[in-house]
Image 1 (cartoon, rainbow, N blue to C red):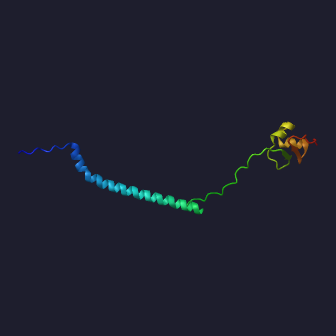
Image 2: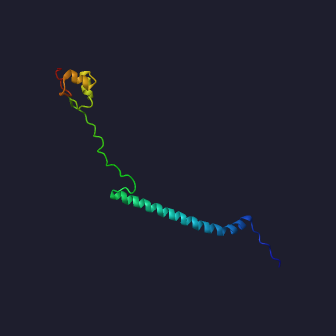
Image 3: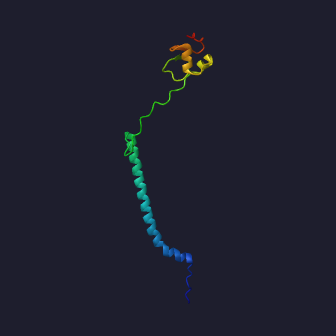
Length: 123
């Protein structure tokens, strides 16, 4: 009985030749990825522990949190003095003067304006 020739395709030949190379390369790649992941995980855990303790390993410490802006409330009383920063809208509307300087010049320093009440007498 004659023996039939085995038919191998090019794909079979290439797979057989590359099988060993791919196994060795995949082991090396898997080991490198695992090492990088372990290093990254360790670093993130250390940073998390440092933050929980209040430290800032190797970085500038975070500034203390600010108190933030005060909530806006409607102003009903305003005194024209040197420390005043802004003139409330109800004072501008009632006096028709836009600046603190003009209001102080007309009414004097330390005069109180109240919303819903008549204007103080000019000086």
